[in-house]
Amino acid sequence: MFDLFGFIRQLIGSMLAIFSFGKKKLSNSLSVYVKTNTGNTLAVDLEPHMDIKDVKEMVAPRLGLEPQELKIIFAGRELSDTTTISECDLGQKSIIHVVKSRPTAITTPQKRQAKPALNATISEEPSPEEQQQHNKPLSETMSELTALDERNGDRSIPVGRTKAHFFVYCSQCEKVCTGKLRVRCGICGSGAFTVHRDPTCWDDVLKRKRITGHCENYEVPCVENDEGEPPFTEFYFKCSEHSSGGEKDFAAPLSLIKTNHKNIPCIACTDTSETILVFPCVAGHVSCLDCFRQYCVTRLLERQFVEHPTGGYTLQCPAGCDNSFIEDVHHFKLLNKEQYERYQRFATEEFVLKNGGVLCPQPGCGMGLLVDPECRRIQCQNGCGYVFCRSCLQGYHIGECFETPTPSTPGNEQGYAIDPLRASEARWDEATKIAIKVTTKPCPQCRTATERDGGCMHMVCTRSGCGFEWCWVCQTPWTRDCMAAHWFG
Image 1: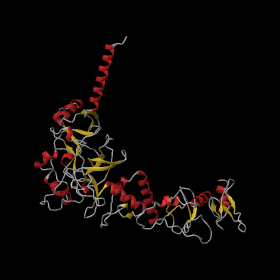
Image 2: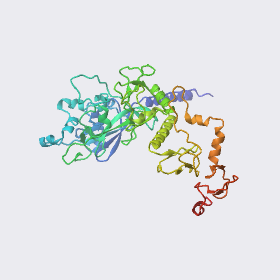
Image 3: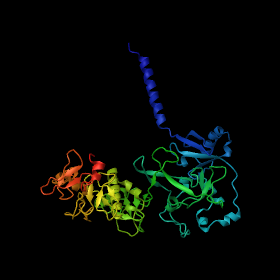
Image 4: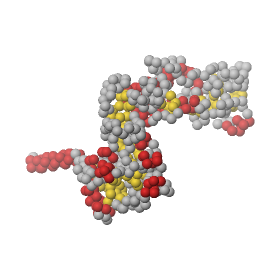
């Protein structure tokens, strides 16, 4: 007999399970770690509507303190009690620092006057009027960073600034992601550190010793030198698209990629994109990310990247502007994995060639070798072991070269781009030549291709009129040294 009541009970239970599962999925709670300066770490779950006062009341009993005795520090700021969790730019498994309040050390006028003039321009402590703004999260108060330092410019001219947005390359996500700016002490590396002012340009963030702050990791605060000057800030970035990996989590900042709040069209396709790359030229030419990738791929296939003294293997603005080379090569991570590996290989080859080295000519190897300029016989160490002549890039031989080396880089052809590596593999007769080159070695005297099919390393050229005795390993005349070292391998 059909159990109607049992069926209804099971149906209701299934519906409740579905609703409870959906409720869990819709929860916005954050699992956050609270780290103290005594080395303890507490795990707490926070809701976006909670404020910092609620967090203090939650944490204080577990530390044996009163809520008013605590200070909460995150991303270079001591957060006020009225700041909500939703304003703090926290992510899953983020770390906030809790320290016990202590009297602020009074800086004597003598020490104030002893500060160098350079520090006076970059380490200004907040005035009382700025204190309320200073207690808000850094993500809420910091404006978009400029390419150049504007602090020495005319401050009377209002500059339209927008809220800061950052982009990073995350090795875990393997793509360009939105990023978060984080802060730690430049002396001890602790995140229990408050900055004296917001960064205003990328130099403030990327260069060392630009902005000072106050470290609260120890009872006695860190100082920069014997004169008691405050320590400098160390900025770093994290990916905002996955859970935090702790204070050692790091993502490479992409300072040229920005949000296109000015609606500037792309220099190539003229479309207006939401996310763009701004070249470091005076004109600030803009490219959408798709066109930038295509620009990089085209120049890569034509081997038009150049070796820059500070930027490495890089490109300049496609408009040919002066002083427009991309100095941070992390931007070329926008290429896919295969293209970026080719970029790295070409960069290595250029470095080797510009420093007087050679590339192993054996098919499938290409190992870069830095050798003595006077050395003619070269062996591919830590690679395929091929021994070749530096002058003609053929198997090592005695006497003058018969062949000239093939140019290692193609010309500056424009238009239809051909991958030189693929082109070398796509020739009908080349397959036979490559097979011969890989499986044979030339006789050092007459250069007849010789194949070794087992046996010892003592070779005798079978060509009529030659009969040269040579070593398969050294590709030099057979000697007692060869007999002792590697007669049978």
